[in-house]
Amino acid sequence: MKSRKTYINYLALAVLLLLAAVCLLSVSLNNNQAALSMPIPLTFSGEYSYDGENWLPLSEEAELSALRGSVILRGHLDGEIPEGAYLYYYRNHIGVSMYINGEQCALDPVSQCLSMGIDLMSSMCGKEWTSIYSPGIQPEDELEIFLYNPHDHGNAAAYRDFLNTLCCGPNPEKTGLLQRNLETYGQPFRIAGELFIVMAMILLGTAMASVFFRITIGGRLFIMALIILFAGGFFIFDAIDVCFLIDLLVLNTYARQLCMMLAVSCLGFYLCDVLTGKMQKAARAAVLLSALLNAVLIVSSFTGAAVIYDTYIYWAVSQWLLCPLLAVCCIFQLCRTGKKNALALVSGILMCTAILLDIAGVGSSILSHGNCSKGMFCILFVVHIAAAAKGIADDYRASVQVQKLEKELQESRISIMLSQLRPHFLFNVLNSIYYLCGKEPETARKMIDKFSSYLRNNLASLDQKTMIPFSREFDHIQTYLELEKLRFEEELTIVYDIQEDGFSLPAMTVQPLVENAVKHGITKKRGGGVLALATREESENYVITITDTGVGFDPEHYMDDGEVHIGIENVRQRLEHMANGTLKITSIPGEGTAAVIIIPKKEDIHAW
Image (cartoon, rainbow, N blue to C red; front, side, top):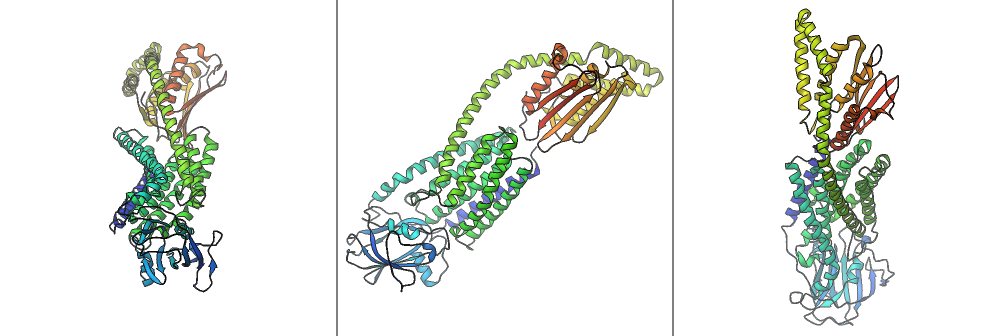
């Protein structure tokens, strides 16, 4: 059964997904934007000014940053744009207005809003290739270009992007040459994104099926599928030529940003499910706070309080805090647990590092952003697919081995049951009950009830193939020990220290060890001894301890007793297969024996 904290994670993720869907739907009800066409590169030379008074030469070394405010460019193009042709450029969240020999020839919606003091609408700003009609521009014509940046961060290279993408071409409605030229750069990312989305759909279907069949792996698989889904969306919407395929600018802009935010959020929730103990608590608190911030940013975007591009800086700052924390938690967990969940933890460390590199702008260009995360995600995707294929092969081999062991296991179950129903035990119990019938009929009646319950539970254990609550196993143990107490009286002292009983374990796991302690330990020692049964909860495990002060044995020769060996090996195999648990037995001849069962908390429940 999942903990309440796990359901809080899923609830937070569901709210985040709902808000993202509402945001994308609401902002998509805006104007469509046109696509463009043909590339013949042009170079603009001249000078620039931020205040219209101080002019500086425009060169490759010029500090032309969009973060310094609006800029005026004055100069000439190195080629002719005939009348009827078009001037194309890449607009990266900026406004553009243009004058030819003092006459205005271009004024886009962003520039118009800013010049009129109107708040920028979400449908106007984004990344796109656009064009203006040429009235006939000659190299000697003087051009004045006003570039406006309505943002305070995020697009420092936007003016350079504009200058580096100036080109001439025919009517965008009659040619697709520019689209085909850019397709060379965008198509690989789109194909990868489409592949990821298809794989995500398959995994989502598998996760839903696992929920239907009550397989506990479904929750983690569902979050992994969402990571792949949103990563695939980011691959597609970040492609340089996406504006040709989807002509709704606001959809492209918002979908890209939301896919990025949601993919990282899902990664955080996935790592929370992998981490344990204090590392899990710290990571969960940070991820939930980040999810809350994301929800606020999304709501502010579709309510008109802010354009989603302007929320990037707040998201980036939160990731500068969240990703290092998640990486550190994964490193500590990896050092503590070794190979357990090693692939998931290492993947988390690498992805968090790649995200931080992308936020710092490492490897980004006008053709593609988030390249560190994209590259790392593709590598890890292949690694996880290979690991899954290996796991399937291992599971197949294990299933063959399980079929071979099932027959042996059934025989060992029967052997255990027969050993538990040994004749001298039955005779002594029945004889004691017979004796009590004359002196203490009420006690005899109670003992008959307990004895019948004991027999019934032993028979039921033959067909029990799933985990049972410890409380049920403990009831059976108490019944058995009460019967043995009736036989051995003062020679058998029983001590219980049950600190935790809210967990499950394979049926007949503790019972055979208790019976071995009584039969082969305490009853063979002169004067008897003490049997103690204790349970406790640790940060990652449940621990069951069975100790006795009997005769003990030499651990190197305990396998000489075939009956004892079958029972202990049966317990060990079922613990390992059904609960990924372990059994450790230590004994000192003449002093006693201790058996320790360790059952991890976060393990799948298997059938045997």
